[in-house]
Image (tube, rainbow, N blue to C red; front, side, top):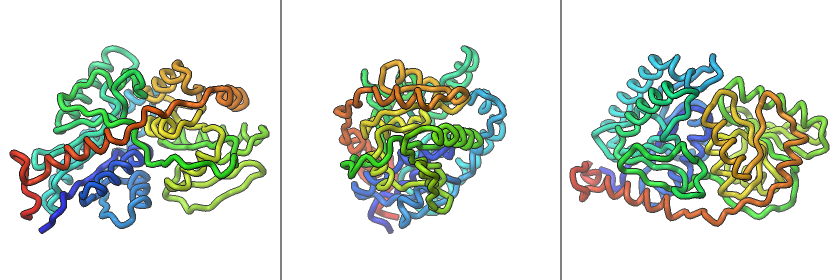
Length: 369
């Protein structure tokens, strides 16, 4: 018998952003009395295991998307048969876990196989409308995307719904009838700077080999510039050994408190335009040079969209000019963080947990197991 709702949180394994934005969700679930289980694979699972070492964690089948083409949409479509098999294997494993561990709800961050009719479900996605290089691929991709989104009872969009939206056309209009905008999600905290220790903080993330390609390009140019640089490689699986090369410091990974402090002690950020990273920047009010992952149409759109609003500076990975980019970012005004509202997430979690309670119509009894 268990007296708390048991909730499984399962982030996608494309980069670590899906797992880092699940951190505040897990904390809010625990704060509101839930018993949380974690499921993912690879680096995302490592991130959550480091953040929550006492929570039960499980491996799910890897999506393991490869990148033979420049377009992420073409890469996904090319590997669609294998991906659909992975989704089906994931779906069957989730069904078994619900029965074995008496789970009462599932929160999936873009894992398409975590839907079920056994318990209430939530899918987290800011990419309700996938960008594609042409109309045919746009319609085909979103037909499949919307079908999967609607397999879940609720959809949470980690963004604001109005003119301050970070995701722009990616999250508008919504194809799901039960959508809640829960505000940008970040595992990081606003901390006062102890000193301006770094001129530039470079945060790396995303799939290989592009993560390594960007690291090499940044290190090559940063070595010729007079700036104090901290480079975080985005490798939670590596030994946390620090390297120092003149004015450049390299670390494999930083946990949330250390990264929050590093951001506070840096004048600006260099990073991908992955959505989870953009949420961190928006929540902490930091200026940044955005370098989209080549071929990831979502990142390219976000960098162009937010760069056009004057919020960040954008550069292409094929023609990085750190000297010019850093100077341009330094000239930007400080971002506005007045829109941050943690009550949006708290309200969504409260509503979801209520749906798992014995008194909720048509739901399973978790207190009687």
